[in-house]
Image (cartoon, rainbow over the protein chains, first blue to last red):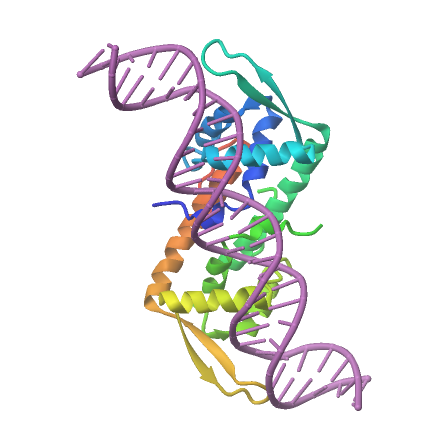
Length: 115
Length: 115
DNA sequence: AATTATATATAGACAGACTATATATGTCAA
DNA sequence: TTGACATATATAGTCTGTCTATATATAATT
């Protein structure tokens, strides 16, 4: 079953920032890591990621620095700033609230998020 | 806390169709019902709903019929078609898969959806 | 008489993710 | 040695979904 593209909207910034919480990463690595951590559910495209990263950098949520790789092109590492950390927390809470509300509509029951 | 608009993307069709599973409804009623069932989290705008409904009708997922109200303007009721039912099931499964994958990335653990 | 709630509808703006394309290097197989 | 593939970043243009703003119309309330 193909993942409905419409559903993916909006939460990519959250996911990418979440990855950076565990340590600095370069773009290509994030694509791989996201695939791995989601059990092959998310296939973020390079053409989606790089503009997203530039946007986050422009807002001051991440900072970037170049670093030589042992082989191949130099890598551009991204680091989650202090502001980025606080924005990430807000985004996580926002996601929980949203997912919880969807569950309420779909399952008709209550939903305490934290679960 | 304002609900991050970016997160809302894509799942409105799912939610609206889910409402129709319980019986035919008219547009204005859906806005109210969605607000109620989500504990005041979703505030779907009329300008978002009606184009969405027309789209679903065009795809054959819902059918529509006019009905006089006891007072005021006549209401346009929407009905979930057989095809709509099957699309709804796919969309629900797709949502579960997606929400589950997000949880994996955020909480770092496993996730059996059905929970 | 004016405002608010009910009820539907469209045009235009905007944001997020996509595809397609471009660049550049290293490895591996034919 | 040539081509294919994986690594790595980047931008232009497109598409889709939701938004705001606006329009129409009727009934109830103030």
